[in-house]
Amino acid sequence: MLTIKGLDHVVFRTSQLEKMQHFYCDILGCPIERELPPELGLVQLRAGNALIDIVPVDSELGRAGGDAPSQNGRNVEHVCLQVADLNEQQVRAYLQTHGIECSEFAERYGAQGFGRSTYIQDPEGNIIELKPYIDME
Figure 1 (tube, one colour):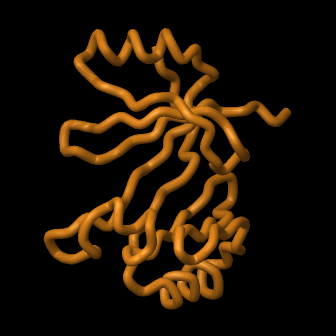
Figure 2: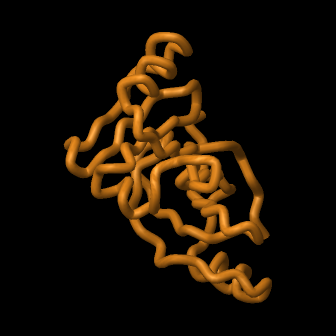
């Protein structure tokens, strides 16, 4: 039912925003593509065809993810997979047949711009976002 086309974005949580931006921007060469206001807390970096999102843990978005990254704390907020174009009702039904709950579909920004996506969880509780791949050719 689902066909994965690629990685859309990964979201890293941090208590060291400046160091993370320096690492990904200055050392790895990922330019800043989009920033939300600091109180919301999201910096999106272009990484080839994908995005690397950095979320400060003391921001509104960061606090929603729990404690700061540590040996026993989560660092990855979620991973977004690009999937072949999908019908929202069919995806919801498909996931339900496998006992997987999904969030409401909503408009979200990703590597290919805005599009509708949903969140699910893997068996370890990792959050996976499913977002349709847009064929740019």
